[in-house]
Image (tube, rainbow, N blue to C red):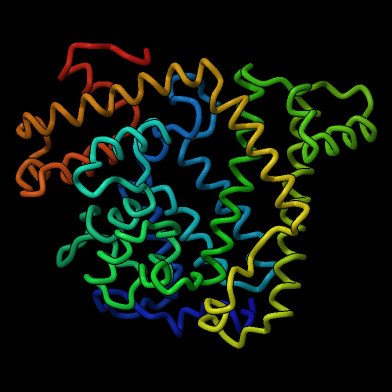
Length: 376
């Protein structure tokens, strides 16, 4: 495929932190994707919560299936825009590698535990995973990914952490948070595809769980029009098939909206290369109308699914698991695996250890260390 002039070209990559010889059949971004897929952290995502805990049902999304759906959407849009598909896919597959067990509840709990020790940000943790915590190579820590992939993985970062990162890697992946510039277009795209994916699959999982009804979701304008279209085009269809077809149509509409809006923004900005595109402000975007409707759908899901009493009950217990694990490990570091117990930065080592856990391992460890059985 021919890349647009503003796409990230692997031949012009800013490279890796440790030099490697070229591969005979793959470019650098393809190698990044492959390293991510073969990493331990990627495999763990299959047992990490998206919204519903892993044991609550076999068909609910996990962090792994979510990441695959993000990659599919992002790659499809990248192809239409002539962006680098392999880089887009690599970023999408890696964007949640640093997520804790139990979804955002685990992340918030760990951030509270680490408040006096630099806090916890899951995007920064994803970068720590690929830069330091994966141990797969004989001569360095981490996966040694390219600058462009690492830049995309760090999609959010506090100002304080950006300064710390930039001090260690001057002009590196955190510099844009200081300068106010954007990441490459592929990173912008992976970030938006994340939003498209979770809005759609959380509708699906919410209705499947029984916490939402199709009738409830059909009151949200963005989704309502596709439900109406589906019922008009397929009278007599069961609610389950109406749900699937409406989600499919909503996804298609959002994808085409991003393609059209971004194509227009690129034509107006006319960036001559990837670096110019970074300095041109955010270019990968929804139209104003779609952005407003998507935000309304997010507010609906927040109020009716993420804050549902049943979800909040599991959230409370998940926070308890994480906070109590943190306290025990800090007091009894010999309970950690040796590679973590031997580190001098105890609290950060404990945070790294907990963040790498799957839901079920965290629950087993919590029961072993406290004698309590939660979230059963």
